[in-house]
Image (cartoon, rainbow over the protein chains, first blue to last red):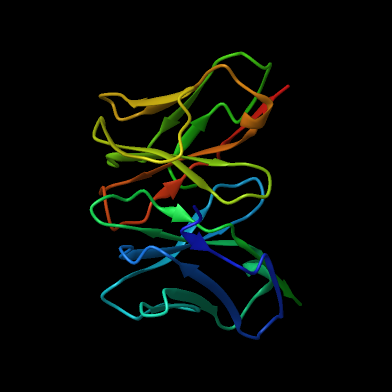
Length: 112
Length: 113
């Protein structure tokens, strides 16, 4: 059962523009959400997280938005840079455990 | 460098065999997680340990087992290996057991032939 879904396998944007990566979840008990970035031959790297008590969290060029009623979160990258090209995974967990459930990932390509 | 160390980086073995994957968490981290990533798939949660105790279990096969030792390192044992077990196995660690980010190692690529 895929509780976390990333329906877009890939996304291509121009350098300097906004990248928007989307994620949907089905488990209404999830209360902590994360985004990870993964380069080939490396492990996933934590990017940004958000608790269910918030609807927005910002860190530099990265902003995560959470819409609990729609069970949807998104990651905005502004401005996008070629070095942002990677696979992005969203993940969710339910208190009190931290067994993060991951989506299938979206491959972002930022073109110079 | 995330601070999480996984060994070996690559492993090739035959069907029916047994292997052990090792993970050393970041200094101070009490939680260890194991994930499996098959070709072009997402990360499938296998199991979580916190301070030596099993904390959560995901889609881990009965042929697989794990443990976390007193020094907090963890091992994932895979037995009676099948071709479909070929995958990247990631270990991650975190300080807390909930509502926290985890830091991933570089993974062990297991190939079963």
